[in-house]
Length: 273
Ligand SMILES: [Zn+2]
Ligand SMILES: [Zn+2]
Image 1 (cartoon, rainbow, N blue to C red):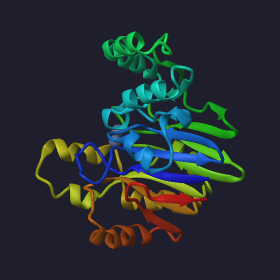
Image 2 (cartoon, helix red, strand yellow):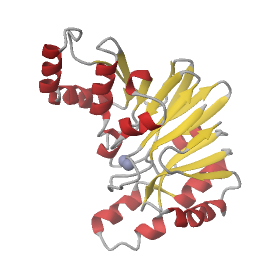
Image 3 (cartoon, helix red, strand yellow):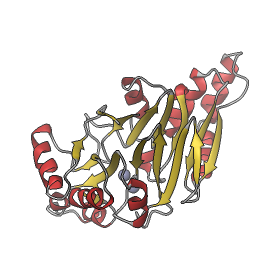
Image 4 (tube, rainbow, N blue to C red):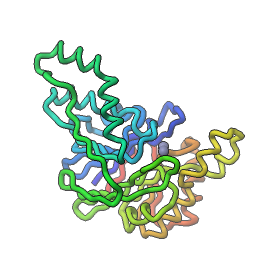
């Protein structure tokens, strides 16, 4: 299984980091987890395309994690020439979000149907709203879900993907909680969105300080990884985004609490498990 960080950024615009998303390739099955800013461009860099996706998994409906979903849907529609159906799984509220995306795209959909004989209808999506705790299967990949904690964003869902004996936990934005522990237990790779609590605390901006109460810090992610026996900790959604010179400091802070491999992501970093 390859885990490719298709976006390691956050809501803060960054020239080098797309918004949050991760692509999992399990054999021929491509699964996208979240679709932040620039996702489709990074998918191309990762040797994938929306038309190849077996499913999109949405962790929560914060805009930074879903703002490129319309691009994924439209590109999937065009590249499959209207023949494919894109499965999207996400928390309750996902169906309404997708429906409204399609409404917003109505002019474009109309133009393309009018222009291309091969297109007779708009994008086909199959949205499944997932109650936390449910498991399902996509293209030979077993997927377990659990509730995460990112209040006031509710509900939020993390995913555990198992294929051929390999396990990846992609838990999204969350503070440490029982759901994350369950999903990341003995995972080959535990991918956690993180902030640097110590650095965020230094920024004298109330709105920025607000993020402290609903994200895992680097140290908390490392403590979770150690507690659940994960083999690798992958840090993504980095706030504030570090430059490469600062990576050793981020890793050292995590390494004080976790003995396994620690990976700090650039966009398109690939972890093979
Ligand atoms: Zn969020
Ligand atoms: Zn986020």
